[in-house]
Length: 273
Image (tube, rainbow, N blue to C red; front, side):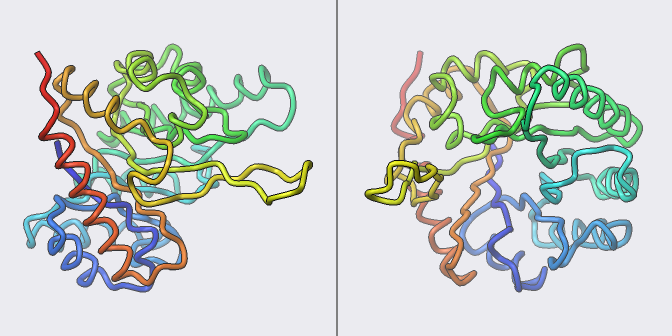
């Protein structure tokens, strides 16, 4: 398996610093945050993304995933083809899309989402990449494996896939073995994070909210995830999401190293027939 880190909370670091940091903690590369305010953006991606890929490659690393802005959910958006083309040229094979949310009338929303995902599939086929739906709890249209698979209906898994998030699946999904079985044919990558539900104490009407915590302090079903992946001989890309907002980048890298080390130790201890 290739292990990479989502670079969202390395905001402010240069590409050279990101490359050095990821290499220092023993990762294989990046799930690169391509958003405004980062070294590579939707606006400059045509030149900046291939250049970034070369910079990673010179250090023996790779960019395995491009994570787009959260509102990147329509193939008609101005930069959609430019971004897919840049990923194709840079050798970045997986593109994490933004999110569709449920507001009212699930079924008409689903039809609209499927039309848009079909458009992304055509772009992906044209550019030699894969568009990924990230399962995410709350009101997203792909909040677990079953919901994400409704979006995939009729589409070629060579061009679209599911970015299965162990943290979110553990919070609102099916049991992880079941979830992975549901989406296995479309499984494009694994996102690794640990989560808990949080709520303001003493308020009956307070909304619940998700909180990212270090590995082992949340509800993610790590043992079941690792045993299932090992039993099924999965050899894909795992992105350590490390969404530790408020940490300075050096601390984010340090916590990523701890999370990765804990996961690796557990992984090595699992024996499957």
